[in-house]
Length: 268
Image 1 (cartoon, rainbow, N blue to C red):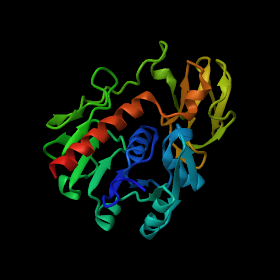
Image 2: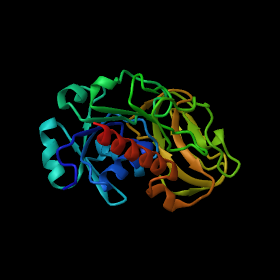
Image 3: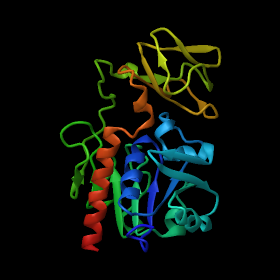
């Protein structure tokens, strides 16, 4: 069991950038409950604890997450030193569970309704939150010198709307749906692909690789997509092992959240 057994930590979101938060807190001895959508939209599914919604149980870097159906099952999962994940699109867990620490890691780039009075200490990740107003602390999510830093007064850097550049590739790294419908995959996450190779199909429209690389992520085939919606991620570095480990960005954000949590406990 953890060092903070009396504390209840609620994490909203189980996507790839939330995974660093979940992993850091778990390794630090915190127990938590994670909420997700009924059909999560993340693409880097091999490193998302929230993928337990689709697969019931997942393991990311040795830490296991398990889907639950009721809040009463939380303690049982904790006894196995695992992380419970529950479907909760309207965040009723905030009022039902009454957490001591609330972390909004949904990465929506806006505040969907979280307020400081929702828990003893409330932390928001990235743009959309203002420390000292709607949350107690904000963690910077923009790549660069300030990534992972904790802001105790003010807001994070506004969203640039442009993906970070990797080996000269920027917007083309993000794979977008060419049509309305479900994604039919032709390659698996972690597979090395070549420019022009057919990666997937939506309706009658194929999706081809814009450059050589490794398919780092692809949205779950049960998600109904719309044109230009993000459905995948192609990495030009072609390092397949990176598809199964939490990213540097996610871990930096997790470190910032861990700092913010400890500061909040010290001042509570």
